Image (cartoon, rainbow, N blue to C red; front, side, top):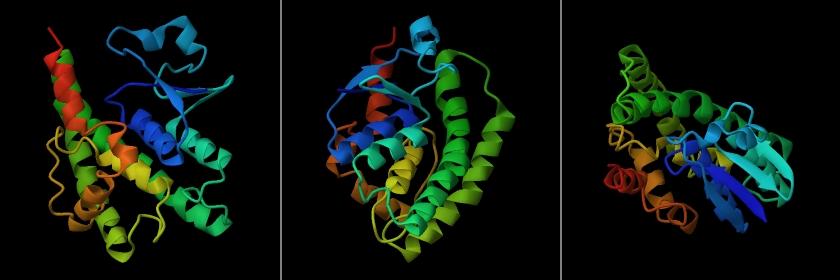
Length: 217
């Protein structure tokens, strides 16, 4: 059985879980306790030398990096969410890369400094936070414009690019990012968050964070 090692507040890990859910792949989800340093254990580093999540173990085939994992899972099922047509696949890859590098990277800066740094009682990097907010202000309009042209990010067919974007903007509320100026993103997001592949992962990112906070001494 496929094993997915992740953390509940990790957007990259969550997009792997969402992908498996879309594909109907049965898997064992193994939470990695980052606060307790489980990602630095020798056994874990043997799977991911950088000690990050997610990692999968597919009957002995170990793979890390969320985008690579998504593509592997979809490719192993010959699923249309990762098109076989070379041009359609290139467009999906284009938006996966755009989301991961620009939107996800910027959101990560904001989430870390507004949520995780205070929680862990470490200094906030104000420059990183400002950069994250600035980058989101630059790149979210690009995504919103694209979604004004088509139902989904890479066209009128749902692809891995949509899963990547959904996971990237999942922490928007807890990070204090107002998505309301981006009406096409909001409409697209509201629709997808009702789907089983999302709700099987969690009700919302906010709920997961609140649950974690409630259990913290």
